[in-house]
Length: 424
Image (tube, rainbow, N blue to C red; front, side, top):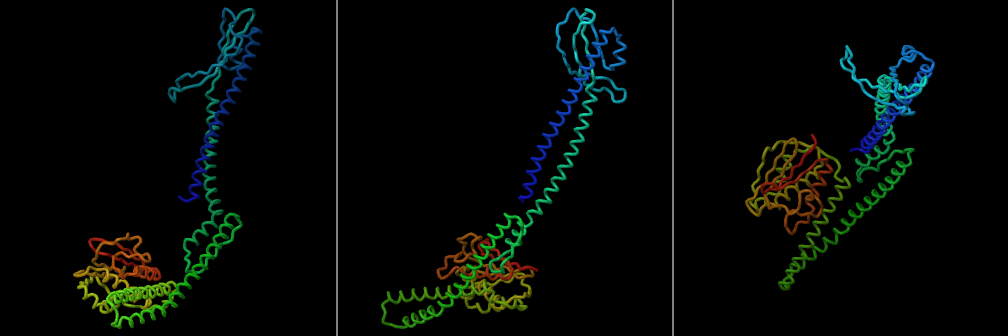
């Protein structure tokens, strides 16, 4: 979930809770205010009734002047001097709406009139006041509801506006690659984002400098070691021509020569990876991939026949792609040599599928020892062949990345399957 969405959700929940609490408080305050005013009204009516009784006014006087339900009765003696307030509910039949529940509040008090003890109750309706309170509360609820929606939308808009520099920086960082040109992060007057961009700019500049230095070092060291490695290889070949060595010495020379040859291949491969990283394989032309694959198979025919490998062309179509010829040669060479080298020792097969969507290279072989997520990493070998330097698949991945093509690997039904897809 995005940060802004999460923030808006939490803000909305808190705001809704506060609004709900506020509505309950407002409603109770309104009801208490109406009840307080009703009590004052009943006390005023009490004073009028006492005054009227003491002046000898008839009951009709109270009904016409006070308008409330009044009950007056004689009692043996005064038992209480306090005012008693009572709430009660009564169901009354309404001709149009049927039975209706009504709320009332009454005051009960006792007094002495003409030396006689009497008890008076004055009743007033609560329903009208409660309806007014509910109406006012309903209006407040609607106001708060629309206010919540407006606040949510306004908060979303303001948050997106305020956070726009952050999302701009995030988008540029996600699309940035160290081999591309340096990115420029936009300026902002928000201190935190400004400090973030400044820190990221320093990191990016440092990474680019380290990448350039490492790339130059790798290229230089690879070129500089080619000559001494070639000299060592030639000297060992010359020593191996001599006959005055013991079998132990001959074995040691052979192992040394084998190690030097492996070092030579490793050096050549590193040079190739560096050239791909440095985009030295510029310029492209339209090449028929089916013809290029057939030509490469002819070049490798001796290796294929030596292991008695069957070539299977399945769904083989004529496909043309814009690609650098040297880069294509590196790709096909590594793909097919890899499929031959890591095939079964005999009676294996190499299946090639080519169509407009991509290419599949499948070869029989023993199960892989590493998981498919790491198979394209440098110095990872998915077979036990001793002379493998573990960079063949890394070169393939590097070439495909430079072409914006993708590759996946899986081992299924006794076969290693490499599927390459390119954009249409």
